[in-house]
Image (cartoon, rainbow, N blue to C red; front, side, top):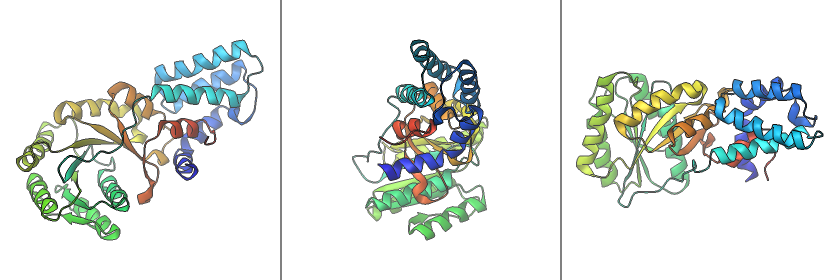
Amino acid sequence: MFGLFKKFKDGLAKTVAAITEKTRGLFGGRKIDASSLESLEEALYGADFGVQTTDEILGEIKEAFRKDKDLQGRQAAEIGSAVLVRALAGCERALEPAPVSPTVICLIGVNGSGKTTTAAKLGWRLKQDGKSVMLAACDTFRAAAVEQIKTWAQRLGLEIVAAHTGADSASVAFDAWKAAKARGSDYLLVDTAGRLHTKQNLMEELAKIRRVLQKNDPTAPHHSWLVVDGSLGTNSIEQAKVFHQTFGLTGLVVTKLDGTSRGGAIVGIWRELKLPIYFIGLGEKPEDLQPFESENYAKAVFGLDAS
């Protein structure tokens, strides 16, 4: 528990530091006052928590302050953390295997969101859990992408099906499913090409991958996860809506939270889309892809310790 919490705390350090700086260390032990409430509001907006969540946090802290003028910053942090846990209620979801192997997970999103590294890290995580994994290198538009996932696969000891640059990505997905089935793989992780959600032809490529997978298994893909760059904040909500309409998303992976001070966006994304958050990226190492836990997240953001 404490090791996992440390991952959250370290991974969200930039968000915590930004809040701490703007509130002049409010949660370290100072008393609440009108000035610190204004600073907290500014800090929460800066961390991209959005209007609704910020209003809810401040509303509850102000009510507690009205009742107790000696309210400490630490108590305010606990109130804020509790509000976040409530706001995120229902967002956690454990990965469940499909009734028939392989369980197919498609990772989609825009360029630079972290799909390829997420596919590799997820594969490593499943392997650590004793599962057999096959990677499908379906980002055939960029030579660098194929080489990147091959390098990850070699480094982490994962099986992979890949083709030359420019090959039909749906054909790679088809061949990867056949290989995964033949080898008895538990999971097939499909790394798709990064694409702009506004480009119809690229979105149609995603639909083609789905159709081809369903020739082998009518229930595939069993999971369709949008990989979202956490540093983009709530700007990623609109792209998620389009992907959801086109491909039918079943969940989210939020990456690069260690590199941004806008870690509050994850709340707005959940509240707007109501898509479960399966994993978050808290660093560069394979083990830094962690299942999302709202309580660890909420406590880490407000600088609290694990229970």
